[in-house]
Length: 181
Length: 113
Image (cartoon, rainbow over all chains, first blue to last red; front, side):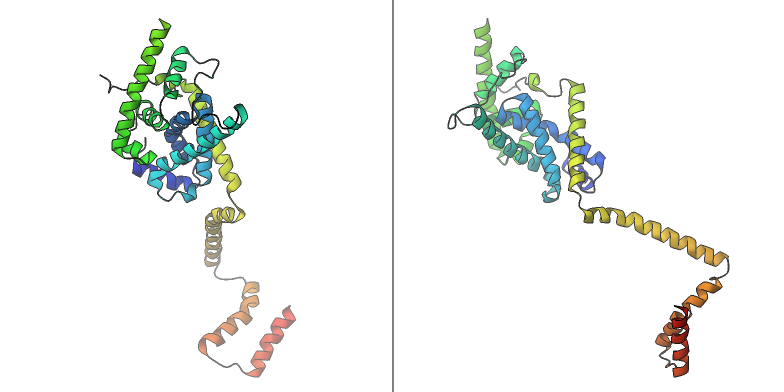
């Protein structure tokens, strides 16, 4: 992830319309946006689309980002909202209204590898906050401070969510691999 | 040890780096296109203001250099600015022009138009 100073500088340059600044910010923040979206929508391909939409929306509203150095946290909030809206639309489209809340649909991709499918199923068993934290920490390499800032939680909560998430993932993945053998 | 990271690399969208680079390019292109659509006429004018001022300043400099190099304004230009110069002189010095002078000036100007 970019430093606060670098992020602020790129955001200022993006506000002036410099194409290189847009690419730098997309390169730095598309993956975190994808991780947050994946934690909510549960399907990697859908998460990529949601992350893309979130970035486009963020840049359209760039002038409203009050703290340019916190562009990442601001973007991730947009990505979360986009993902939740997307999930609501999918629920209306795919299943009868009123069923389940924020459950993921792991392994929905027909070409998903076994490992990928098992991971998605295991992630689907976690609470949403645990999914976000473990994906940002173990996939994106965020620190607890960065996660706390991005998700608006304390570092202590971030650590607790990560600990719980890892335990549950290991339990789910362990039982899945036992089930296959 | 339960506190080691879980290997989530199977979910890494950048595992296929070529595909991920293409995705970054596509997002950047979309962002730039959306940004261009959003730029209003006022923004466009603002964007052009600085280069336009630079061009205008350059033209003024070239004109001034030409005047300086060729020893002053052409007679036609001097003549056309006479009434303005005369009026400016009266205004700056506080001198009250005599009626014939004023009539001559206005008459000259009127006759020229």
